[in-house]
Image (cartoon, rainbow, N blue to C red; front, side, top):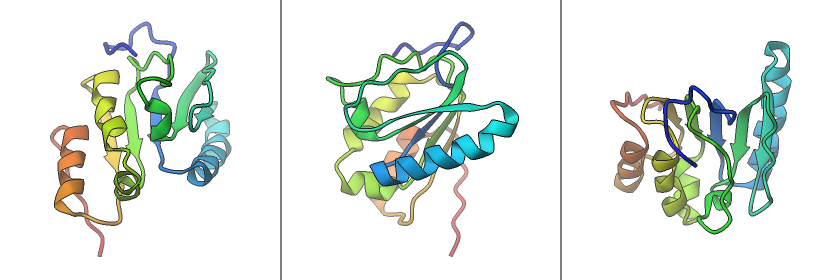
Amino acid sequence: RAAGNGSNSCGPRMLVMVPTRELWQQIRSESERFGRPANIATAGVFGAVPVEFASGQQCLVATPAHLNSSTGPAIDASGCQYLVVDQLDQMLNMDFEAQLLELPRCLPQIRQTAVYTTAWSEKIQIVARQLTKDALCVQVQ
């Protein structure tokens, strides 16, 4: 899980974090459907299932449980240009804060990050700030 500039990385260009297996299945399916015309291949992993990231797959959809230090993937994320964190509020409610806060150590400092949440409590704002840099906040009411 080395961080770097990604010039020789064979890992994902995009990492999508979701809280549950059900959402993982939905996002992975849609990623495959929309990525196919652009030749973007998607891999997915949830829980402690071993991950096999094949050469040519650009997107990895995962649950935070998989990023646990003892069972985490041996994925080279140094070339990851995009991080998507979906349902941050639900992930915090499921006690995935430690796994989420581990992400910046595994990814390049220069990347685009999108964080989605249905709530905007102080706790969520703190975690969102730790995952992003120079963030723009868009709220829809």
